[in-house]
Amino acid sequence: MSISDSVGEKWLGVSQQLPSLPALPRPVYKGASILLFLGAWWLFVAIEFLGFRLIPTPVETIRALVESIQGAPLTSGGQSLYTHSYYTIMRVGLGIGLGICTAIPLGLLIGWSNVFDRYLLPAFEVLRPIPPVAWVPIALIGFTSELMSIVWVVFVGVFFPILINTIDGVKDIETDYVRAIYSLGGSRIDLFRHVIVPSAISSMVTGTVIGIGIGWIAVVAAEMISGNYGVGYATYQAYRVMDTQTVVIGIIILGAYGALSSAFVSLLGRRLTPWERLES
Amino acid sequence: MTGQQHETTEETGSTAQQGSVLLDEVTKVYDPDGEHVVAVDDVDLRIDAGEFITVLGPSGCGKSTLMNCIAGFLEPTSGHVYVDGDRVEGPSERRGVVFQANRLLPWKTIEENVNLGPKMRGELVEGRASELLAEMGIEGTEDQYPTELSGGMQQRAEIARLLANDPDIMLMDEPFSALDALTKEIMQEMLLEIWEKDNRTVVFITHDVSEAIFLADRVVVMSAAPGEVKADIEVDIPRPRNLDVTTTDRFKELEREVLELIHSEAREAMGGA
Image (tube, chains in turn red, cyan):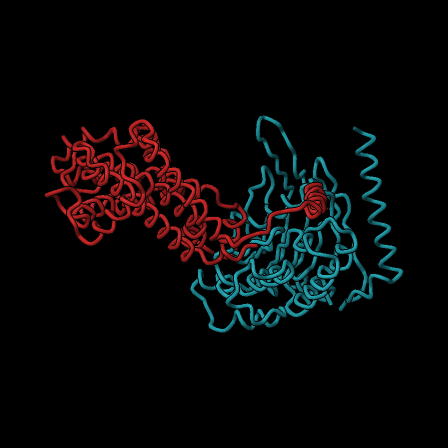
């Protein structure tokens, strides 16, 4: 028995003697925590803390949100939530798709082959620290179309986390797996197929989840700077005319999209790695 | 039994059975940061086809390095390894390896793992995996992932993976060292059963004296720093063996002999330092 085990057991013995609150089901805590947040929000508006008197209360927001979902224009005389969402999702989707389709193969190649490691990685290392949003002006000039420039900015945000994580995943491979493949008569291609790709999947998924988070940041910032349509654009335009209700709706919608997309990728990742759930 | 084989291979001089190994002045030096570490020092060793040898020694004596040289994972700094007269220049499916930490691929099911060698070589036989798993006493595990099995069952599956490839030589690097005593004994008997059936050459690395004697035709005792062959002891206990032989006088005598060797070696090493 290790030291930490015995300490853990002693603590368990002590804690069992302490009076404790009855444990409630997990959803109860979740609900309480969210209510606490909504209460704080309401309170700040009610006491008109700093500029909060201009911000809608949770109840007003929910009412407006329902109207938007029913198809009401997001800003008076403007487009509906659905039109704006279409633009944003298309931009972020294209950027993420391009990012995944380029970063994963490149990451596998760079991790696998010294040639790619030497010739490609240094250039990427130079470009990597540039914040994606800093690309907006040059992307607008370089790509001329608004769609392409925003897609580029998203792509830059998505690309590097996936690339770096994929490379790490490939380089982390156990020597013994490599030896096992060769001593079973496998080739370098077999090694790639049976060891490198499957063992790097979870790193790829991690990179993709991080990348998508950055992709959403990038699309919102890019739309605020240069968009016509898009949820980020609508949110910023609403701010400029002090339509705070729409601003808050924009925030909620963007948060929901971000959460949904990373939940989707995590789910996909679990589907792709059925063996990892089994480790206990 | 094994004596007969020695004679046949020696008489015909060659290919009656594949799987003879010759180490010719094999030295392996690691030189990580300018530090000159001699892991294996000038080892000459001849292993006949079909022979079961164990390499016994303390940790760090270079026995795994020696095995990795035979497997072709490492290239000797000087000297050569020959298998059936041909120089070893890299890993080959003729030399199967069972690793110390279980090295089934965790993302493949047991069946996919067992089929891996034949599949990569384009010689997949449908149903062969199930046969081998049944032979190893773990039928019905085909669709499970390695982590769902106990350590002993994983080791059985790994041996099945190796057998599926039908190698001439089985290289085993302390395969049972992580198992509990009871499982270990069962695995040792099972390994002997397999070996007695098709007499592949086995090179089995261990630091467990009674395991080394129980399994082997010959125990090669290594000493540490630098890794050298200290003794090469013939085990004249008749086969087939089961664990009962471990209580015989001859077994105990051999055990004492080997332990004495190792202890005097250890005393020397401590006194010298």
